[in-house]
View 1 (cartoon, rainbow, N blue to C red):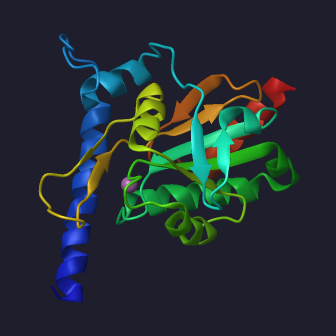
View 2: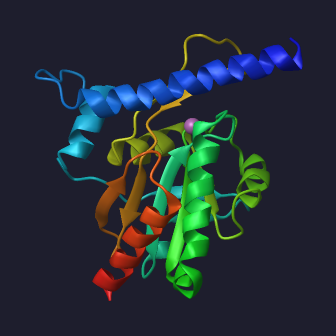
Length: 213
Ligand code: NI
């Protein structure tokens, strides 16, 4: 496959992912949510704050170190779920998140940005290391076993699934793209919609920092 065709396929996957996020936002909760891991059910639960949202996690960072949620107690966690092969949605969100951290200035030391992969098969710690560095030096990128990733993703009402359109190791992962705020006490505080500008993210985090004091 030529580079151009690859780029085209990546672009199509990205647009498809963006449409999924938008569709999931617009659909809300269906009348009959038989499958509570469907995108409609998960996004509905998030939008209606049907808890509990969030949960403890036990994962591995980009340096290969075990990291649990309690390691970050005392800091406001800003969490984004995605995957490094994501063609455009994840990089855009992580860039916004990184800009927000910079906007916080000295307050950023009380904030921990976290990227949790929904593609643990490909996103190994060493793969995450290069990726995280390209966004922000303070970004901690986390991976883990498929079951550990699935557990934390579902706890945060994240929908993710491999796209059926591709085969082998060249696949896309459709996923919702919310940014989650977790207080210094480890409790879920709220979410920000995909596409939230860095200034708004920074303002919400700043409010959370004051709230927790
Ligand atoms: Ni993505």
